[in-house]
Image 1 (spheres, rainbow, N blue to C red):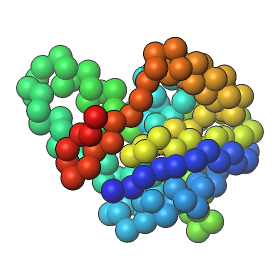
Image 2: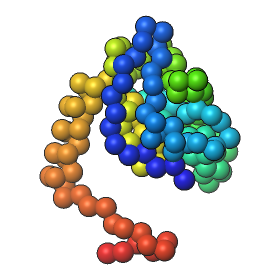
Image 3: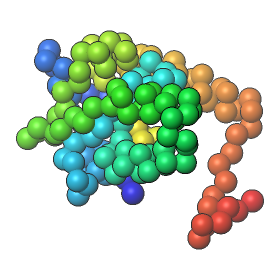
Length: 155
C-alpha cells in the first residue's frame, strides 16, 4: 500500500504541468496506472490525490452502501465523478486541469502534502494557514493516534 509522507513545493509551468515529488511517484510505482488520481477536495481548497489502487479499494467500499441510496450517490459523485487519472510524463510531471487549479487557487507553485494513504495538493500560502489551524485544533482537542499492531488497536 502506498504511503505518502512529507511536504514538497514545486513550480507549475504555464501549461499547468508540475513535477510530482519522486517519493510520491515511487509510492505508486508498480500500480496498474502510471500516474496519480486526483479530485477536488470537498473539505478544503485543495486537491486530493492517491494511486489507482486506493481508488479501486474505495470503489469496493462503495458496495457497503445501498446502490441507489442518497449516501451512495453523494459519496460516489463527490469522489468518483470529478476524479481524473493524471499520467506521469517522461519527467515525472502531471498536467493539472484548469478547473482543479481554480478550485485550489494554484497558479505558480503547488505544495504536495503527504497524508498517509492519500496526499493533497495546495497553493503554498493557503497550505501554511491550513497547517497552523490544523495544529491548533489538534492541540486544543488533545488528539492522538492509536497504533494498530497485528490488526489490533493498542491503547
